Length: 378
Image 1: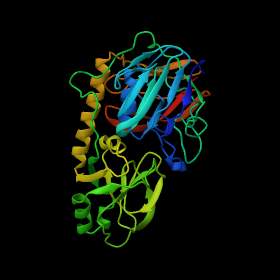
Image 2: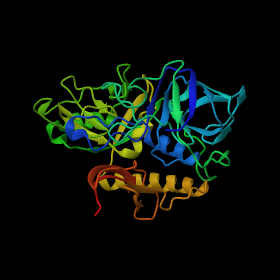
Image 3: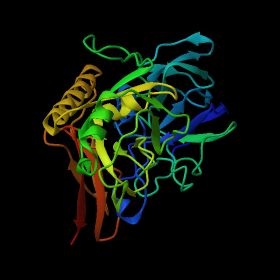
Image 4: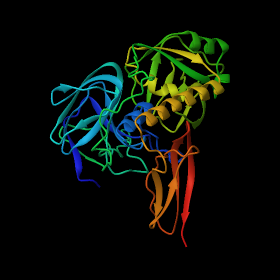
């Protein structure tokens, strides 16, 4: 573990350690967790030269004040927060060089709800089941399984990009920062149980405006509005849930499942929010208005490809070397792992005995996937 660290003078309203989640364990009832706005986390990491799945600070509504113990580079991406370094306002969505002893203060969000502070080298808390994400319900992972508190000291990993990686931002063709506002148009694919709803219920969902309830959290967003009617009733035999599943209990009020969702559920699911819109939805504050638009699976895939193309463009712009950056190691042997285009795949280091099998979850070319990696040595 690195000797570098940061100290939280104040922790903010809800600040946790998150990466891209704890994948591969839902069969055991372990939630995925991870960043609610994964695209912002990935971009923040790219801007400081980290693997895009590195652990960051997820900041909600009111940010922390941080003292840096050593020189570093940071980037804040996501909602619009005022941020200053030693009393000097600095830009978000751009990497910023930080000197040892400096104090970084992140104020209140003025547009959106969540942002991600990436630090070169990443937050180096011990991984639990291949992830550094905080599981707030399970009280494990992240930093002692809990939200950060005033006075906490967090380890930071080593990085080759500290010396020359400041002021790297987005390409000119990409908007510096999105505007979230209070009205959200969210795309969904109907199913997997839309047949359990009346046509009137489906039409109601797609033509009505819903309000984000104050009873919303990292597990899911509860929406309030016109009742969505079932064909036979709200209950089904419990089955697996997906990120963005839109459950409708007996009240007819939809619930959108997010990162900390349970692994199974017994309410009918009328639709699923497409992956590129999950981060957008997570920026909605209680009281914000949400409308749904139904799209096809093909349209959802195209939206995903567009989002991944944007991230690749950012990587190219900041001159991040993608080739063979991640390796899998076991007993001193090393295998380079790249995606189909030769780009970086962010996976944890794998160590083991002469033969070991691990479940690896990653993102490549716009697709999330898992594979079983078996290493065997003679």
